[in-house]
Length: 245
Image (cartoon, rainbow, N blue to C red; front, side, top):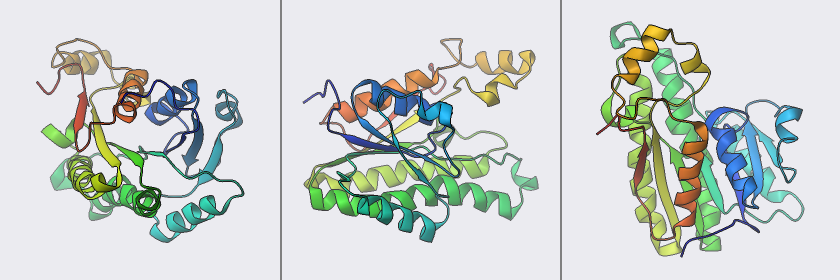
């Protein structure tokens, strides 16, 4: 079955104050979903005002296991809280450096946020989904997790780990009607790509068959597709303009 709208569905998107996370939240909001926005600090007022329906908000550091568990428990204790139907694990950081120069602290920080953080959020919500016998989880991986990238050994390891986590959770959740998939974006227009020099942009685009950077909205459309098609689970959809062909 393919969902045409998400009315009466509650969607939590981590790391949703900007970038891909915000675009994903807007895409579900456009289709009638109730959104829960997440950030490590308060969501800016102009972001909240950009939604059709006033979103709920949560604030915590996904890398902090105890804080994450406590905040999610409190979320479920809110009056008339309907539960979470769709979880999008998008929160992430980068601390780039070539492997021989990377500090153990920077390696651990990226793993703790991008991989362990996704598990910290998923585990308590997955338990609730098992009880409610339905749920969709979408993990935001990266093409870097599939092909590697110089200077991103920590990020590549975390994003590859997310793909393995996706496959395992898909197998564990299937009998309870819980689907788990991943998206692996390539080079997406962002503050990071805007900061690149014209020469650097040209070098990157030389490896992208479609010869342009992707848009956050195109990643968001993929999230909506995965949440809509009820016979897809355990898959990683690459959104990269052909970079990983």
